[in-house]
Length: 305
Image (cartoon, rainbow, N blue to C red; front, side, top):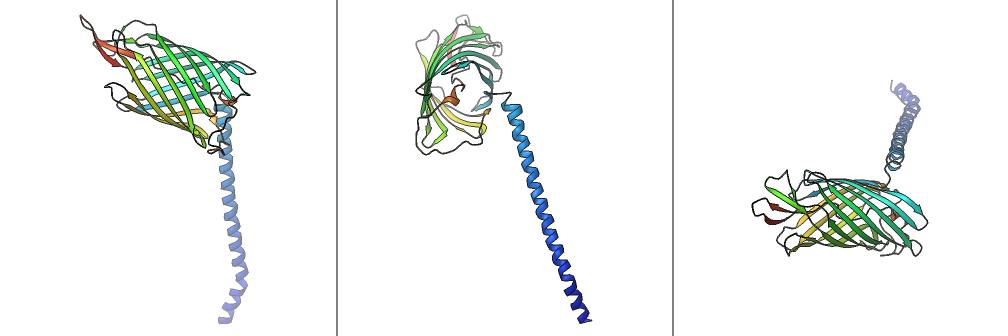
């Protein structure tokens, strides 16, 4: 009997070995098939994003901003070329913004940009019309900018052209849009062009007073290769108004870049900015106002909104 068992074991060993190898091959084939299917799904998603989103929503972004003790701010913004010839580009920028919970604002602008020094420098000027629907405020804005791969600089001037308005959403209050201006400069972190920092000074004229609402906004942002940009910052006021920290998430399918490099060889390098010709104009899209109470002798509260 022992001899028979040994004989059977010896006879069946090749079968067991073959079965094990076959099972391993089946497992490997299944794993390879799963990987292939995953790759197909990834390619389909990538193709969908490119064909449906990137191609149809070029230079269009959606963003949400969160601030302490304030309702989220939503915005959709697009920049589209009107004329693009040689070193000159004329473009349209439009945005729709909801902020402070119930304030809807539209911004319509035209801009002109020009490349200098083999497209290593981009300069531009722009003009905007801003309108807030709920309280019927309106404003004109004008700006100038310079963009390079090393740093950016811009200035904006705002002219309110609406009189005081009663705010139907806030009983007993009226408000008036304010004139103002801002200056901003920005650069990227050494060796990391996708990580930028900005500093902005602003000043808003409070009507019927000699005081201005002044302050600074400091922000940093990191643009990922997936078209998502993360922003964080702090607005500091020169008067008793509390500082306002904020965070923001922006999605722009035009910024999806598989080959984006996180690091570069040099800390700062002057290079072509041709891909920035339709970057958005950075400005204050909200129509900021000064509120005052409605009384027989109206008293200015000096509240900035």
